[in-house]
Image (cartoon, rainbow, N blue to C red):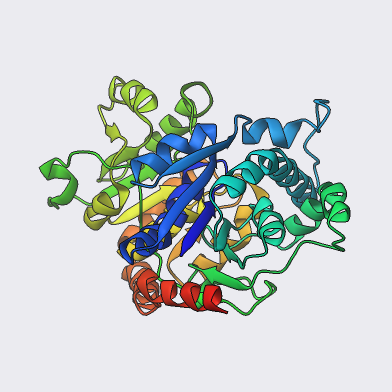
Length: 378
C-alpha cells in the first residue's frame, strides 16, 4: 500500500500524523508526507520521507487573499472560524499543483489528510483513491469547513462537486469523552501517542526531586519578539509558589529566559518525558500539548488566547483535569491562585489520570493500519 499523508503548517500537525504514518511503514507500506516547505524539517526529524508542496506560510494564507491583498481578522468568534476556513482553503489551493505532479509520479493507494488539510479530499477524488481525515488534537469547530468550501468553490466546481468530499474513514485521536458533541461522525478512535523532535536527555528531565515541578509553555511556534515577555509574566506568576518552574520553548527564547534573574530551566525538551516528573503544566491550550499532558496524567492550568481553543479547554476542565482561565481573567494573581489550587487539590490529578486511562484504552495505530488496508482492498 502507498499512503500519501498531508500535514498542515505547524509542527503539531506533523507530530499528530506521525504515529499512524510510522505504524504504516512498520507494516511494510510505503509512506510519503506532503508538507509546506517550513514543515519539512519537522517531518524529516521524526523519520518520515517528505516532499515540499508549497513555499507559502500559513500566516500568508490566512492574512492575504489569492491576489495578495491584505485581510483583517474579524472580531466575532464565529466569523473568525469562517475566516480561518478560507485561509486553509487558500493553503489547499496552493498545494494542489505540486500534489498533482507528485501523484503523477508516485501514485498513492490512499490519501490521509490532517483535520484542516482540504487538499487531501480533492487530490484523493482526482486520483480515485480513498480519503482518510485524521484529527490533529481535540478537534476543530465544524464552522471552519464552511469557510474552506467557499474559498475552494472554483476547484470544487471544476470537478463537478457540490461540496468538500466526505472522508471514507475519520481517524480521531481525541478521547471520546472530550469530543465536541456537534462534530460529525462516525469516527475510528485511535490512541494518542506523543511525537516530537527529540533531544539528548539529562537526568533532571526524568528524575523527580522533592519540590513540586511546574512546566510552563506557549507551544512550538513562539518567537523571541512576540512571546518572551508573555512567558516571563507566566513564570513570574507561578514562581511565587514553592515550586520548581521549567519552561518548554524554542532555543532562542529559552536562552533569553535562562539569562534572566530567575535562572529558570528552559529549552526544547521532550515534553512527554519531562511531564512524567511534573505536578502541573501551565499553557496556552494547544491541542497537542493538552493531549500530551493528559497522556501523562498531569493536570493543567489552561490559558487559551484564541477563541476556538476555549471549548476544548472547557471540556477538559469539566472532566476535573484542569482549570481554564479565559481572556480577561488571566491576571497574575488569578494565575497564581489557580496553580496553587491545582497543586493542593488531588482531585485534579485524579481527573487527569482518569483521562489517561481512557486514552490508553483506545486502539493503537498498528490496529488502525488494518482499517486502512481494508479500505484499499475495497
